Each structure stands twice: as structure tokens, then as C-alpha cells.
Length: 325
Image (cartoon, rainbow, N blue to C red):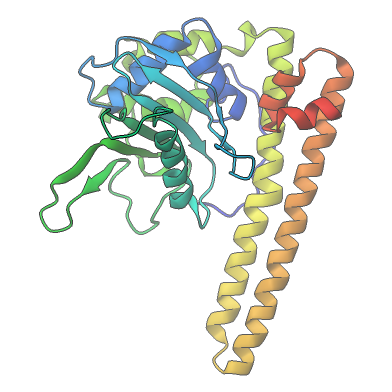
């Protein structure tokens, strides 16, 4: 990803689908959102019309005990054939991203065990994790923008278990121009990368559910409350990108560069101190960003235009925190 400081977001004709509020508005907020989400998931699964309906599920998934970590999803739904689907938008890479994806799906799977069951005389549902990534998992491998990951046997490559899938959309790897758009999957990638910059519905997008996406994404159609929530989400994105992403990447780059230049054990120890210092600075930036989000929540709450739930979703804050403000 680029390490430049992002500019303050401008508001165009269509909402930014990659903002927290915009993502949920399009896929789970407006009236036609269910049809849009069905088509999105079905296209990623091969576009064979497998999914005819779905039911939205809770985005907070509690552990079995108070000590177990709570899992929060961006979107969760159950298809008409029983598959559990998690959809997550990830802005930036972090060290334990893969662990988080596995943990999220594992928690969902473990809670499917029927209470009181004594033997394995039941079938687990299929679990599908869809990750929309605004970064490359591997900066040196840019040839694939859509990845399907399953549990396979190491020697033969044969699928060991076919009811756990990770579908990852690496948005920066999609480099096709409009003339190269061939499939509906390509159209989804183009939409995710370009919706907020469009000023009309392109000819190649005038099919199936895509015109619906443009229709419900028009900023002029938003209510006053929706507009406020959207702008708060954009502000949150801007603050996050500048105060956290840039700080952490600069810290990591600077520390790694210094570490590479130092050879002796004494110099390595010095580099480790430097790394700890830079991490502390990044943590301070993260704390400041969180404080800014709290202040934004207080300001929105003072207007009385949005509910606590709307404010929490817009700024990605826990609902209980917003209620206490």
C-alpha cells in the first residue's frame, strides 16, 4: 500500500462503498440490499444461481463463557441452503490477519454443535469467509485478484474438507480498464474500486443488480440522518488512515531500515529499543485516533439526529460505549 498521507475525502455523486457505513448501506441497509448481497455472494461462488435467498444474522458473536473473546463481523448471513457466510472489509494488513480469519470461522463453527448432543450424528453447515481487502496479502504476488482457499491434502492438492472456504478479494491487484471487463466478478471489483469516483452508470455496468447499486448509492437520495452517518464514516476513515495506518507503516519501515543497517549485537539491541520506541509512538497515535472517534460520537449524539446504534455503526464503536457517552 502507499505510505502517503491520504487527503480528506471528498463527497461525489455516489457513496464510497469501502467506507464502513457505505458498505453496510449497500449490502444490508436499503430495501434491495438482500438481492445485491445474494448476487455478490453467488457470483463469488461461481455464479450458478446456488443462492436464492438469505437471512441476515447478528454481527456480534459471543463466546460460550464471559472469558471468551467476542467476535464482531461486518456482515453475517445464512443462505437458503444453510451455509453461514461472513463478509468482512479490511482496510489494512496486520500481523495476525490470517489468525483472525481462522478464529472468526472457528468460533462460528464451534457454536453450531447442538446442545445436549452426545455423538457426532449431525452435519456442520458450510462456512464461507469473504474478505474484501484494500491491500495485497503478498506485495510480490500481484497476478491474482480473487483467491479461493480451502483445506487441501498437502501432496495431492485434493480438497480435504469442502465446507470451509476463504474467498479473498485483493482490490489493489485488479488492474483491468473498462474495455477489459469480462465477467460479473470483474464488475464487482470495478464497483468496489471506483463507485465513489463515478458520475454515471457505465454501459458495461447496466445489467442485473448493478443499476440498483448505483441507485441506492446516490448521495442525493440519502436522508439527513443517513448523510450525517455517512460523513461521520468518511471522517473516521480519514482519521484512521492518517493517524494509524501511516504511523504504523512509517514506524515499521523506519525500524526495519535501521535494523538492517546495524550489524553488531550491541547495535541490534539499539535497533530493538528504537523499534519499541516507534511502536509506542504508533500506539499513542492509535489512542489519539480512538479519542477523536469518541469526540465525534459525542458531537453526533448531541445533535440528537442519530440513534446510538447508528452512531456506533458509523464510527465502528461498541454500542455500549456510545450509550455511556
